[in-house]
Length: 164
Ligand code: ADP
Image (cartoon, rainbow, N blue to C red):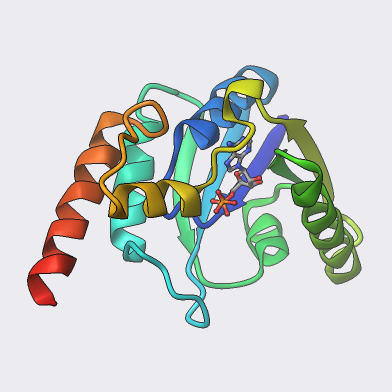
C-alpha cells in the first residue's frame, strides 16, 4: 500500500490544504493527516477544534483520515507503518523551511522520505496565518477557506472580542 502522512498545524485548515489533500488522494492509497499538538506553540484554535474542522474537510475522501499527535512526526510514521511525509510548497521562502525540515526528519529517522507537492497557483499566497489576520480585520475570506472554517473563525473572533 502506497501510504503517506500529511502533517501540519491546520490552524485553521484552508483551501490550500484541501487542494493538496484532494490531489494526494488520487496519488496515494491512503493519507493520514496529522494535526500537530505542540505545547510550545500558541494556536488560535484548540486541538479539538482543528481536528473537527479538518475531519469535516476530508469527509468526502474515502482514503483520508485525520489524527491528533503530540510527538515527532517521524514517530507517528513509525507507529502507523508509513515511510513518506507529504508537504505542500508555496513560495521560495516556504521551500527553504520545508527543505530544512525534511533534512531534520531524515536525521531523526533515515527511513522516512519527504515528498513535496507544489501549490496550485490559486493558493500561492494562502497561509493559515494570513487568513486569521484577514478575518480578525473583518476581511472577506470566503474564497480562502471552506464555509465551516469561515463560520468557526467568525465565531471565535466574536468570543475573543467579547472578552476584551
Ligand atoms: P501553514 O503553513 O499555512 O500554517 P500548516 O502548518 O498547517 O500550514 O501546513 C501543513 C502543510 O500544508 C505544509 O506542508 C504546508 O506547506 C501545506 N500548505 C498549507 N497551505 C498551503 C497552500 N496554500 N498550498 C500548498 N500547500 C499548503
